[in-house]
Image 1: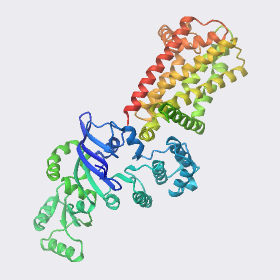
Image 2 (image 1 turned 135 degrees about the vertical axis):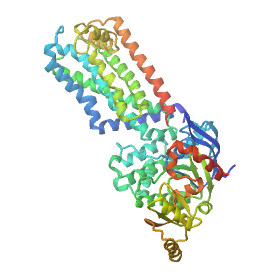
Image 3 (image 1 turned 45 degrees about the vertical axis):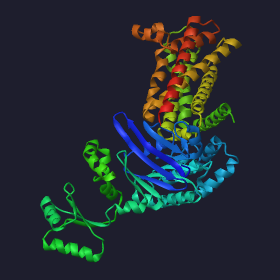
Length: 327
Length: 254
């Protein structure tokens, strides 16, 4: 397939007994942004490592720019750029020297100009000659990404590029990603944030415990997610029972003592909801209106909350639901 | 460009980077160069008077101190190598298709050069403190050759340990045995003055034949062929183990 920048099928990877990727398939069209969305421990970084030739898969095929990542390592490496989860900058070199190091290793002609342009573009020119150890988190990420861009890779992998960044740096990073796409670069991006995937991606794949539980455009995905809802928290199970009985269509969480009630969030429906509670003389301890976030996407797609990815005993009980929804 | 010349080019680039690291990290300079000199001052001016050796104590101590200067510089290398590994810098190089050999050679050569500088400082300060070797020109060449070999061998071993360690701290700790070995050798006192168990250990551990060979050469005498052979064998062994271990670990760990 000519138009696929990345094609993955049947990808599996386990560390000992722990299955990290349990047979995943997806394709990324050239010149598009593909976002892999998932909580910590879902297998995002492992996917990036396999796709960027840093790790060998146990099974499955991965083609990047038409080359197999096992038999065509050199060809793949020649066209990709990778920005890992932690800013991989050399702290004892200045920003300029870090970029120069990349330019030298890639044998870029007129490296000084390339470096100068990147420093300008990423707003790092003022600190260019300071050691990277003195940079803020946002500056490091920017330098890291600038280093990845040396040599103009056609396919760029960004592993959680905005995790730990303040909102302003995050927006700056989004702007940079959009510019790259405008230049025709293909971007594979992992994130924990639905809004980030929504902002940037042409297609989103949701990864949970090593499986892709959903794939599609942001619109398709959001359609599968409950819309705005009201969350009510109660003092005890008795109140929760009563409220659940009074409000059909609501979903309860016995551990958290919460009830989520679908609602469009306008004043009229909220008033109706509160009136109904009054009718049954039920008092809620807390009342909040939610717009969907990653937790909701997860809940809708997998039937469990994002944290479950870290606790293996829960993984077994939830797997059945995961599969059912993935059908 | 051919693969070989690309690798050499990459190695030169990595070497330049590691040299910059060395001069910019005051801790490295202190630990690798100044600390051995401080140890030399202590041993010669504080403890040395109490040790019974034939001839001047400084003439006895300098060969061991040159070996110690080499091993003291290994801690910073292990930590730096591990930092590159755990902070994703080596992954960046890998994904850029920088030759593995070039990355590793960059560490080994820069550490070896730093060790030789530390040794030059030890010998230089030694001269100022009254060190009077009687080695001929050829013997000096042999001394430098053995120092080079030892520095190269322990660098490979250290790079491997740095790559394999889980954290920067444990990487630094991994080199402690190499740093301790000279103390349990004939570096500062003759082995036959030690208790039985320690003496046997001192006689069979790698650094004693190396130090005895250096001492023999520097005194202008003939070191025993057995010691010289054992010294070189240990160095070659360290190099092979370090090399194989380093290459395998670097390839495997992402």
